[in-house]
Length: 246
Length: 345
Ligand SMILES: Nc1ncnc2c1ncn2[C@@H]1O[C@H](COP(=O)(O)OP(=O)(O)O)[C@@H](O)[C@H]1O
Ligand SMILES: [Mg+2]
View (cartoon, rainbow over the protein chains, first blue to last red):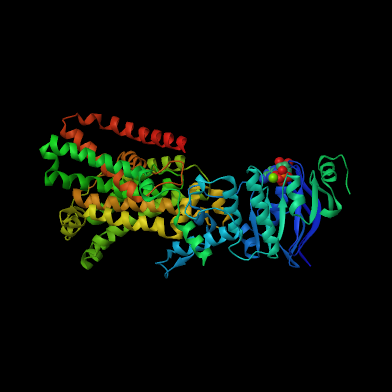
C-alpha cells in the first residue's frame, strides 16, 4: 500500500521551474533513494512534502487522503518527520534540548509548568542508544561531530512514531565511519516499518539501503525503478544526462 | 540491566565537569573580578567598605541591573534594545504625572485620591506603558521584520520626545497624600539592603528560572541560536521575538518606578543614556550579541561590576568626566573578549 503519492507536482520560483510534473509513490516501510545533480530539485521536492513550500500545481496524497500542509508542523502532526540538509539544530542548546525542541516534556500545572529535564535526558539517551550513537544528551550541539549532529537530527524524528521520514543529504560532510552509522540508523527505521525518502549524492549509500531509485534531472523525473534492476553506472548516466530516461 | 547501566553512564557523562563548566562562564570571571576589586578597595580606601557606601553601590546598580535582566532576554534572541533609557524616561514621567495629578482633569484626582489607590494606578499605568512601547518595538521587529537596531533607535528618539510631551517639560515632585508609601516602595530598605536591590535579586532568580526551566525560556535561546531551526520545530518564533521586547520595556518601567520613588521627583531626562550602561552590564555579564548565550545572573553581576568600578574610580579621585570613556572601553572590551572566546571554540 502506498503511504505517499505524488501526482504531477510542479513548483516554480518566479521564472525558475524547479519541478515539472513529478509523480511517484512511496510504499509502507519502503526506502526510496532520490538522486539528482545539484539544483535538480531534490530539496524542493522534500520541502513540498514536508510543508515548507506549497506546490504550484499537483496533488499530494498521504495515507490516501489529499493533503495540503500549511506549515512543517502540520506535516509532522500527520506523521512526516524531516532531517533537513542544513540539519536545523540549535548550536547553543544541548543534544537533549534539540531533540525535544518545540515539544519539551513539562511537569506541573499552568502557569507553573516547568521542564522535566530528567525525563528528557532519559528519553533522549534511550533514543541515542537505540540509534547506537555515542551521543551524550547533555553535550552542546556546538561541540559535536558531524555524525553526532546527524544522530541528534534523526533522534528528533523518533520522538513520535512517524510513518514517513524524509532525509536530505544525511551523509554529506561526515566521516566514513559516521556514514556507516547513519546508514545503520536508516536500516533500523526500515525494520520498524517506517518509510524513508533518502536524498543523497553518494551512490554507495543509495544502493546499500534503498529499495527504489528515483532520479530527478532539471526538475523532471527521469527514472523510477527497483534498485535491484538498476546499477550505479545507469544511475550516473541518468543523473548526468548521458542516459536520457528509463 | 546492563543497558540501564549504560544509559545512566551516558546521561551523567558530560564533556565538562561542574568546575570546568563554571570556569567557562564569563559571569564567573566577572564575579572573581568584582571580588578582586572589592578586596583591593577594602584595604586602599576605608570609606569604600563603609556600610553606607556598600548600601549605595548595591542600590545604584539595582536600577541598571533590573533593566539588564530585560535586556538579557532581548540579546539572547540576537536582538538589541536601544530604547530602554527613553522608555525609563517616559514611563517615569507617566508615573509622576498620575501621582502628582495637578495637570490631570479634576475627576481623576477626586476619584482615585479618594479611593486611596492612585499610587497603584500610577505604577500600573507606568508598567503598562513600558510593556506597550516594548510591544510596538517587538511588533515592528518580529512581524514587520525591521532591524532591531533601527526600530529601537527610532523608539529611543520617539519615547524621549513623548516624555517631553507628557511632562510638558515640567518636573513632578508632589506625589499626593500617600506620597510616603510611594517613596517607601522605591527608596525604602529591608535588612540592610535597598528595596530596589531586593527586587533585583528576586527578578534575577525568577527570570533565571524562566530561562532555564520553562519551554518559553528554551525557545528564547532557540530563536537566538538558530531562528530557522526554531521555526521548523513549530515554535512561534515571531511571538517569542516580540515578547522579549515587551519584557525589556516592562523591566525598564519597573526600574523607572523604583528610581522615581527613591529620588522623589522625576523629569523627562530620567534614564538619559542608560541604554549604554544597561547594554554594557548585560554584555559584560556574558550575554552574546550574536544570540543564543546569556543569563540573568550575568546581568546582575555585570551591573554590579560596572557600578563598583565607577564608585572606586570616584573614590580614587578620578574626574567623573572620564566615566564615559571607561564605559566605552568596557562595552568594546566585552565584545572583543567574546570574539576571542568564540575563535578558541
Ligand atoms: N527558495 C527558493 N527561491 C528561489 N529559487 C529556489 C528556492 N529554492 C530552490 N530554488 C531553485 O530551485 C532549483 C532546485 O533547487 P534544489 O531543490 O535546492 O536542488 P537540489 O536540492 O536538488 O540541489 C534550483 O535552481 C534553485 O536555485
Ligand atoms: Mg539540496
